[in-house]
Length: 189
Image 1 (tube, rainbow, N blue to C red):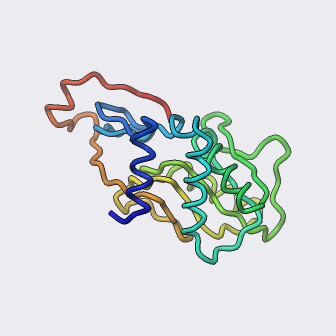
Image 2: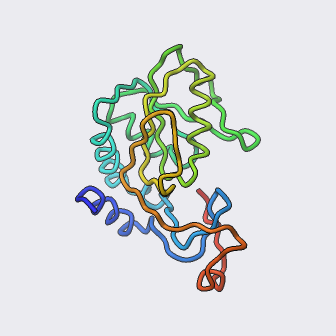
């Protein structure tokens, strides 16, 4: 683990954003670990630091707009946009599908960075990519705090993460005994 990963892990542990137990993820899979980024997002100094680190990993990606899926990506997306001096918009659920509302639009060819807190399968990020494509924008990349997909989340643009954590996930009918004995918590994402 490099220095950035160590620092990010320490931030998540210190703010109680990395939890242990038995959790049901938004994907429906179960895990013994859960990233509750809402905990770290209460601490604006930590959010500012995480955004600084994330922007530092973007290299030469050029964008004018940040699009974040609600709820998880809102705080970190807005901070990335603030530091990058770019526009910030978000997609929100309507009948459990992400859409742009509130008058948000994208200009043809507008260069967009998608920012999310945690990905497991990458479903909400993919929905954002679809929104950008349908609106005529150009996605330049995806930036996430934590990629827990174990390399399974694939996108047609670069995906940059501060932390890659490969905690195992399980279907409900294939839980290890030690986890099956704990009550399942669905903390929300």
